[in-house]
Image 1 (cartoon, rainbow, N blue to C red):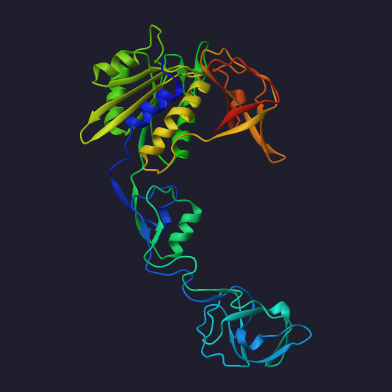
Image 2 (tube, rainbow, N blue to C red):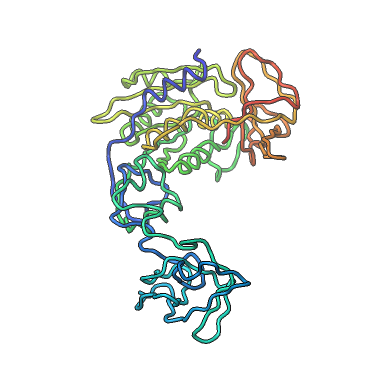
Length: 408
């Protein structure tokens, strides 16, 4: 049985970013991953412009200016945003200017309007700003031709704003991974069906679709598959042919109806992981299938709802991030938090306890979810945002002590 860190290392070593690249526009770029660096032929700001409503002046005219010695300048022009200045500022002159407007020739400094008094075409400067103050200079934030955004960056609202500002209207992104999802078990029914004695509603199918979508991948739902080898084999064949990654729940333990591993081997899959020293989620099958010009990664995860999601957060999420082309750190994020409850574990496996973390008085604190924490009870999983980790070899972490928390 592998440790969590050993399993994670094997999984990430098996994954390579998808090779196929697509071109997208600003309108459909959200949550995509840049495949190539982006640059712009434009400087930003595009030109010298005012950072304030006020007056564009020559700083030389304001030397010695203060409320005891105000300076009076003649207003020769008004410059709203979007209008090209028509005049050059000479000694003793000023231009009324608004935020974002282009600086006129001759001016090098902005006096904000709060420090002025206007009387017709004259303005009295009551307090001098610093030299070149309140001027946003051309190219101060970005110089044309330099790298604007690097490859492997996830595109969100800030990145779209940057790309739009730079007039980058089309760019290359990685293809979104396709993830086949199916649940196994004779006892499972869809949520819309009438529940009969002994049956269980399949929540995993829907939880995993949301999980996959949240990571920017495309879920390919294949439904519920009965515990019949021929049905499982047909579904797995379809899954590995259509998808880049497969997520199946159930059928990976050691019961009489757990056929997944046997079928994977029959179909030519190479199995790398069979179990991990983690709780919940000990049964974990990871295999690869070599398809034409690509590799399909297969995850067989437990059918218990909490185990399924913990397995996804801890092992599938890093793999899917790397597969999607995301650069940098694919691993989950961890913080040290003060536990508000006593935490207990068997000590034989790395144990994940679900609950909520909050920032209180500048520090992280973790609270266990209320109620039973068995892997089959997903009811208290709602509204949780973290998993406290009790390491192998430890059986207790007392309230008030620090605990490592994985953010989810």
